[in-house]
Image (cartoon, rainbow, N blue to C red; front, top):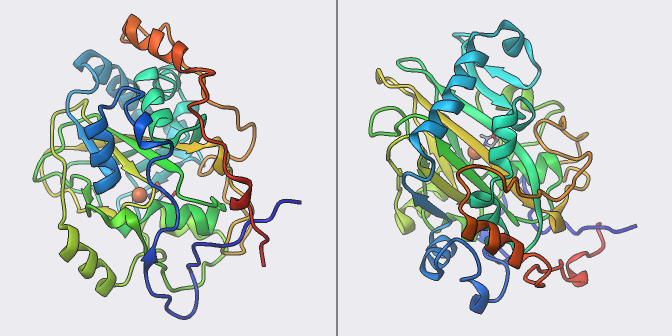
Length: 336
Ligand code: 6CS
Ligand code: FE
């Protein structure tokens, strides 16, 4: 049986000092960084900062299609009752809809669109699958924010994700501006793993998805990393894309503005990094939060109208050229 040593201890009683992540950010040899939709300088920027911001990634008509679906969901009582839908603690409004790629053909296609998939392959150096998808809907005037955290810290502790070989694609379905609680990131924070104190209670997600208290770094650790890297809040029109590394510290403030903030997220995890038993010791979270069943590599939907012929060719050439890195056997070590 393969065991994994816990290289990222967290959710402990006693404090553990932050440490440099032992794993790479971008997989594959730097000489092959250019093999994919991102330019080498974009790959280096992602590696350095832990995120990349691309404006106008989707066309207005594509965004309107997603918004039409989302409007339908927010008006549908059956969607609100779904286990995968998280509502706001006090207003009862929809806060997040998980497993959105399972809800509609349109979202499923986007999760397999080569414009995203090829970037995931380029950065993670392997086939990928959807670890999690969601829409975070921050309504005008009342949308609540998200506390500072590393997604990987939660996915490692509560989902058993062994290593940070995972990226999030966040697509803005509405403009993200100074006032409606845009995503804030700490550049460079992805290179440091910040263990968090506090034992994880069973079914923690029933609380944490409404208001996260566990897995929030200590203020002194946040202050130190923000002092080193600053804080950036990518703002731009609907259809923009933020690609961020699974361990990049991020948060977002409440939305007191009259402008809704609706962002779509797809999380691509390497097939070399499939979840094992949760490192916090609890039972695994539901599949809509962390895919465990039927983990098949994502294959492109290349008849997507928006995909240009050259992307299709690039994708097809990319296959079977050994660009993908297998996890070195040594990485799988005995688990205490
Ligand atoms: O627990 C999770 O998986 C979710 N929680 C946050 C705050 N970000 C990632 C993810 O949506
Ligand atoms: Fe997050």
